[in-house]
Image (cartoon, rainbow, N blue to C red; front, side, top):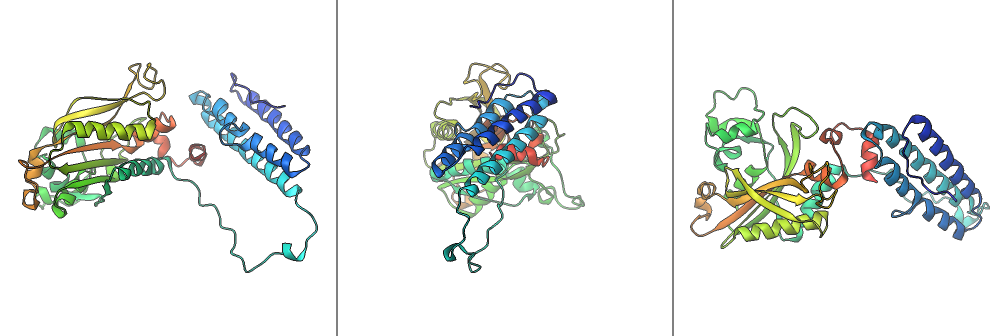
Length: 365
């Protein structure tokens, strides 16, 4: 009986030989299917989600392949998947009775068969996972425009003109804005934090929101940077909110996303709109915190920034009930692409945006 081997040779000749061996095995086993019970066993053996042969091929061949061979191995695994699925379907059809009775005739009044709509992109799937976690904690989803004014993107978040922190978020501006006052000039938002200010302008405290969306920065594309990416930011404002509430919230969220064994670590940082500020790292889910190439042998992977909302930010919305002497709050922000790369073991952010159907099919399995 066929078993999936652990490959050590990923050359084209070796891959084709393994494909032929697997093809012979699935066709031989399909020919031996004679009844529905045997067909079910055959289907589960090859297509079971947890331990089926297709799952083993994906784990032992594709995930274990070196970076330079992943494209070829991915194409091979996709061909094998199509072959196995068509063979399993053929065995099921071969067991159906050939004679057609009145009850088996086509009823043209029934709805037609819909075409499959595909799978969620890994970035959207990860973003929806994050949204689900915070919705379960009582957070609402808030959205805002991608084309923002300088006031909402910078000034209202404690980035006054000429503040050095603006250099770290060099943005893409809209043309022909020079004649306008600086705070009214339009740009592509560098974070989803403007949604927090807009929400506080419209809603009195308490507030608990998350702000998912697309953001833009003038970054050169490489394995870890993209000029267009996605964020999920969060804001909680109420009386007597402390840094302990922030730590507990994010620790729970990371465990919900990556598993209960994940640990979180907070260490000091700086953001103009929070004080105190912190960066958040989680124990590496690849090595379990022991140290590997992904976490640079540290056992930790930095995922987001957070902190207590600076009273200066509340001053911009104090007329709507945000008195910094009576209320407090925390904010956090995480890059969705970085979360997706950790969750699905992706080592190059550009793979998420190049539109390679073979890559997207692999990640949708």
